[in-house]
Image (spheres, rainbow, N blue to C red):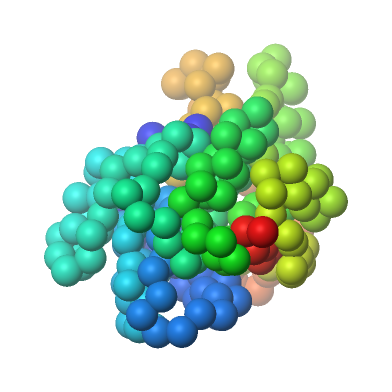
Length: 251
Ligand code: BEZ
């Protein structure tokens, strides 16, 4: 994963990530009692939602910090530490679910991750997920790249945001049959007058690592002002999210 989580701030200020996940969970078509792995469960909010729907859930995440919060919040749910690109389960599950995780995994590691998911599923098991899709946060990254360039720094996007065609091909190569795919814009309201700057601070630590610390605030402020006419509406910042939502079955 290309991030070091600030787990507490993530849970308090970016809880929309889990709230939107409810729509993804609705794509699961399995009877109560089915086993579901929540891959990249973070602080466990959606794992808990899945349990409330009657599923027999397991959460898995790479971050110890996130797992500590998850275990505190939901002591009756089993949470395992695991790397999404290199894990096995003792028993295969009926469903693998994931929300807002896979774009953190580099393109080169996606086939290994999909193979792990495939191996973790029963035959005919369902794989239901959502991630950042093609051109996710294009306005944000374009503005930052522009301001970085003016200050003499290179800007790299540390995410993988595939199109439907590209990701469907990876799923088929891993042995899945794609049953559902949707790429859609989801402008996402951010919290507070500094919502966009806070979002950049939370999620874009990697591109800023090439900028000397004393220059970071200036670059953020310039980029934020450049985006104000497009991403600040009425009294709120919006992030220009694009989602890729898919469902596939293990053949
Ligand atoms: C996303 O959920 O699409 C996302 C979140 C944080 C940074 C980049 C993408």
